[in-house]
Image (cartoon, rainbow over the protein chains, first blue to last red):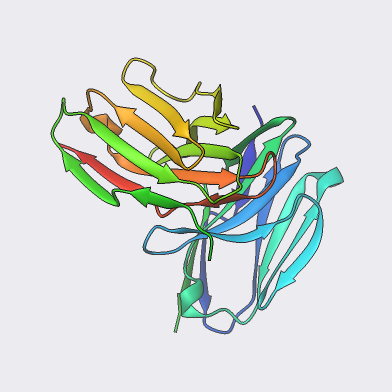
Length: 109
Length: 112
């Protein structure tokens, strides 16, 4: 099946710093989503982005489907950005999502 | 504000007992997924339905797990008998065909 690799596995930032989270995948995809799992365990949709670039406030994402990677940018980080960031993809007619192992982000005040 | 709902939010049970988890997908979504999250395995798909028909349950232990969708507004995941290794957070998600999926708050299951 498709492989999803996220990097770095852990990230510690000072409040106000910027960061880039990366997701590599091993096959063509028809769905790519970024999620934030908050400290209460909820999975929050950040972006649905099988290709192209999107922005939502301090967050933006870019997927280069031909090169099989996606990037999530966090600018001016806040303590509430802490948590685990997951990239998940699906391929072909099968819509089940395959998740990466996640990136644990800690933003310190 | 449309969202996926799950009940119960927390469940503690003893080994051998039956557990039933329920999910109400977002109205109009035709695809419903059950995922499980553990520290060891991460997030993995158990089963999913499209237009209430099961499409893939290859991630589910067949001898003890069963998933059904009795109507468009209700999906159930049942474990019988439950075992300590089933302890995990179970998420339901819904979407439209191969599009964006939205996750419920999860059911945290602890089997003693």
